[in-house]
Image 1 (tube, helix red, strand yellow):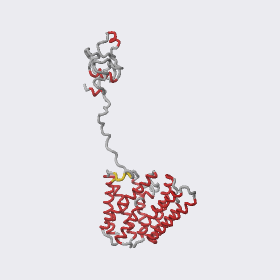
Image 2: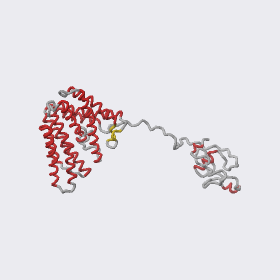
Image 3: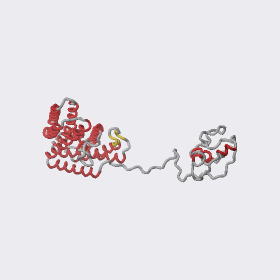
Image 4: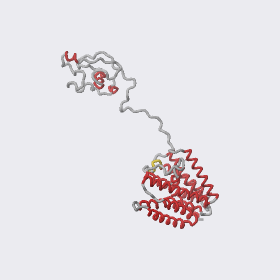
Length: 377
């Protein structure tokens, strides 16, 4: 019989080599040196067929002696009795390979995809309608998005870190920054940025000096990160073909994000930045670059006055890089704050800031390259 089927080595029931006495816990003498009276007192219990481990003194001892078919005493003839039947469903040995648990679970988007698509289409319709109907309406939409984004960012900073960046001067200055960028260009945007930073410093003086430097630093960062970067969108809008430039900017950013998601979800294997955003892959980045370059060539050739397809290829490459870096930067902020989303205003998306993460750093890149390629308009 195969000894491994009982789970004990060949001498498990003996406790030692043949020339040694019985091991502690053994149920039968190890040899004929004992008299008949002692042997009579230690006669083995009857073996119950089909019950493993039932016999003389324990699981291992019984399996070692009875399982080998050897005599209880070394010079006795083994009695004729049936071997215990093997259990019907023996437990697998530790080294027995286990069967596969089944096919791996399908990948999930992690969000309500239907809600995300619906909200995205709705927002896109509002933006495009305001963009091509009245430019001032689009400027107002950008200003509202900036104010809401500032509210989300300052609220999370206070909740998670205790940082109290003054919202009132940030909101007023941010809206003014967006309007100044549209009306006065880069010069107006920089002046509004400087005045907003000054207002943050003064506003915070109304509270005790403790943590003053921390709070005003967070306020100046918020002013630069949200409204100042957003002014480049309204600066694009100020050109003669400004609506098409803004549309190109929006299309390329959305296409880059879509390409990264689609390719990464289907083919992603190698993590891009696992410490920052574990869901992003290098394959997804390749998808973002490919999608954005194709879209850039088409948009620049057919939508931008004086634009060429090769300029669109470079524009798409730059957009894919800046959108990815912007997304990673937002992920760094959220990881530092210990949150998944900046807000819950947009079902399936999170908050406004969760949608502006790739748009904000991409706006100055698109504005600058279009100015270099075709002029300021």
